[in-house]
Amino acid sequence: MSHLSNRKLSWVLTNRVLKFLGDKAKKDPKKYMKFYNDYGLFFREGIVTTHEQEMRVCCSQSIMQTQAQPNANN
Image 1 (cartoon, rainbow, N blue to C red):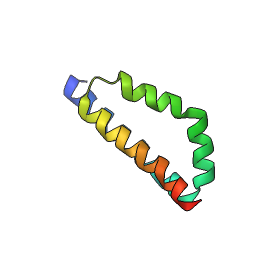
Image 2: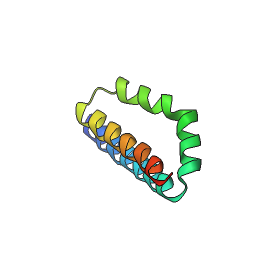
Image 3: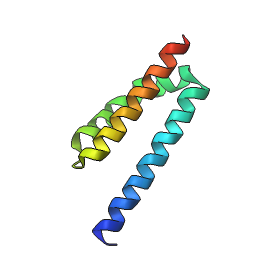
Image 4: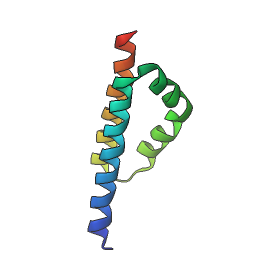
């Protein structure tokens, strides 16, 4: 695969995972927060280690939004 194809595939997969997590956060906030407390470190590490600034912004905004939603429901 070319570099451009890999980048596009990375974007598509990242966006689908973030959408999936966002949906889970809306449906079951307590379960999502448990998941995030267990694995959030890996998401934050991924944001820091990615080389693409646009991907960093997209991921960090998504995580902040899903993290804020469950708190608003409590």
